[in-house]
Length: 304
Image 1 (cartoon, rainbow, N blue to C red):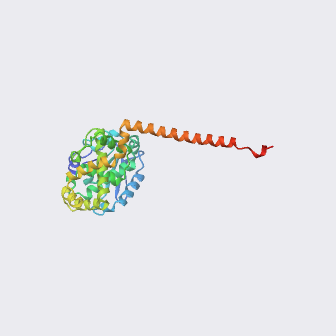
Image 2: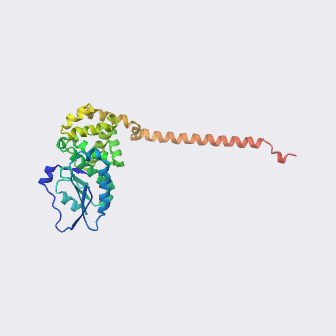
Image 3: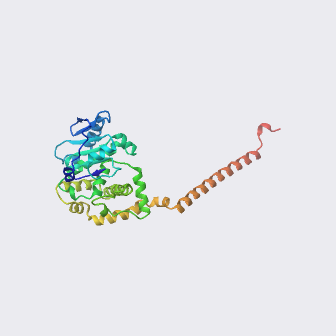
């Protein structure tokens, strides 16, 4: 899930295997290139068109044109097709300004414990957002670009939540400023960067509203710089937002801190066990008292 610029695309134009026989199918807004017998292109087109229809706030500001989706059958083919520096764990790549997506075969994405639909929507979101904000796209911080794609794609990756919590409790959250132009190259570092990007954009929407997000996109569409647009719409500069967002993490995830401390965790479990024992003992004592009362009462049937 990596976004590259048009300059990189033109300089490092992907060269697909000459031995591969590529076929293509089209819909009103997408063209899927695939190799026969490797995937179902019609389902990909349907997913793409469904998502496109969900995003009029972006698509209405885009120039007309097709978006190409290349589906690579193998990891090796995917790496060669991107023909640019990309991490081994990546499964999709978007070139927003050239309206182009390279993505792995759904079966390989499933092996990576990801959902193909989410990955596809994520990469399409990059293209739609990049096309909509193309006048300012080079200045937009990477954390915001990825956070936007995750938000629009409606992604849910449980491991990201755990990653974020772990770094909140260990006080090792990266400042957003460090995620402006690139993400860590290691998968662990990238996982944290994606988790932070997702949470930062989600928190922005929580405190300022969804309308503010689209107002910010409108400012970028008009060609305003990200710094100017952000301060105009949000009311904070990026450094202030970064501080407020990091401060909010400990407040919003305070409930989970109990489970991050082994003393609290085992103490809590011990307390629950004790409470359960007391409840059971009280219930048993009431039952014994009831039986004793019954024994003290003479049964009228056997009265002589």
